[in-house]
Image (cartoon, rainbow, N blue to C red; front, top):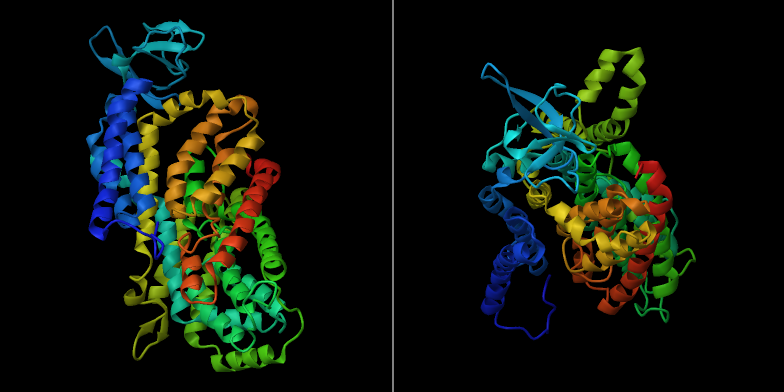
Amino acid sequence: MTVPPNTPSPPPWSWSLIKVGLGPALGAVALTVLPALTGMPTQAAAVAGLALWMAMWWMTEALPLAATALLPIVVTPLIDFADLPPRPGETVAVVIDESDGKSLRYRAEVLPRPENAAADLVAVDASDLPNDSPFENSEGGLLVPRARIQPWGETPSPIVRALTPYADRFIFLFLGGFMVARGIERWQLHRRAAIYVMSSVGSSPALLIAGAMLVTAAMSMWLSNTATTLVMLPVAVSLTEPLSGSDSPRTGNGFRAAMLLSIAYASTMGGLMTPIGTPPNALLIKQLADHGYEIGFGRWMLFAMPLSITMLVITWFVLTRVVFQVARQRDPRAEAELAQLRQSLGPLSRGEWLAGSVFAAVACGWVLRGPIADAFATSWPSLGAWLERWHDATVAIAGAIVMFALPVSIRPWRAVLNWDEAKTIPWDVLLLFGGGLCLSSSIEASSLDLYLGQLLTGLSDVPPWIMIAAIALLITFLTELTSNMATAALFLPIAATLGYTLADSGASPGLLMVPAALAASCAFMLPVATPPNALVFAGGGVRIKDMTRAGLILNLAGAALIAIWVTWVGRPFLGL
């Protein structure tokens, strides 16, 4: 987190040295102490130490966030995951020696080991093994010595295991999405859309704030929150300058502060609506898939859009009626300013038209690919199968390639998107995503999640709705101090483990992971919480006490709404 100005602190070099040293120190303590205290294997303790190391560096920003996300590439190859016993649900090979000296390998699924079984035995499903196999049969499956268990398929090398998460399909979904968004930004199509929408909603200050929130949220569904805020701020400032009176809450209209905060908050809330709107959403969908939940692009939008729209309505009311008193009367000065902005746009350019067409095609591909594939599964099987081979990442990369190839002009050659523009996408987000995935896969490979589950068994009787509310509230306030991606990367595996632990009380991994991911993006109190918050605060016109007051109300409202929505809607709709 950023140290606030005028706060006493040690000299910069010593404080930086302390922050850098705290991470590996915590990791070393975990590696040394956890095996003795909990009985977990060294591999699990090493991954726990890595998680604490990364958490400390992410929270203190000792290193750039993306640099910390590269740490698993260095550390995880040093951990011997192959020496660990197989996990329940894992596919393994059971080796049986034949009388002629040959060895045959049979595919089997690992089952939970019975409590009375010896520690060196592994319980497996016996359905594919011969009836005369030389192993003991029990109610919990066939008990096979660990010496007879081998990996099924090729075992990746340690460095391949570490690097694979950084090339995950969801990273390429973001890569393609960022490039398509950059094409939109290059031709300023989003600015045109913003001005057109805001000039259509009315000229009263309260309606202008509603229009700004609407267009900001809509853009943030597809563009980065930072880019959306940067586009909307000049438009908002130009509207507030002739209209702003006193910025004091309640005694004046507070129009400028309310408008700026509405843009920051709507940018965050709009990102919740799509898998690419904010990185925690995509990380959640990826990890849900690892636990057996398949949630497509359109299905997530149907789930998240009503939640986000409800939050937008609450935010508008809080900003215009609770924290500030914003006028509802029509103002001719706003009409004149909007008319001038609209006139300055000029006619729609060829670049805007082409960029918008590609974006529309990509968005339709994301939303409709699954339903179209299902519709043609029987009537046109070859087309249905072809669409099934694609992924949302394929659609995104295809859209980016088309933008590179589609000419706006021939002489001189100018494409919709060039590399000078494309290389400015937020690469750090891609590295953060890869680091989170690598940490999550290491937690599973080391069986750290199973040991965490054993430590959390005391919570097995807690009703799921209480745990959902607690997770949403905790992460909503924690993410005020850490990046949303870092928070999600650290807490999603813990939420999944907790879901398995609370299975007897009706919980599941997905039921606790979804509120954790949603809450990780809901930070409204502090300028350091999100880039949009920082941008509107740095521009002036927003006092820290106003942001804190509005943000506290929205944090509490957001946590409550997430808990209610996930419990009553997410569970049946997403199959949690």
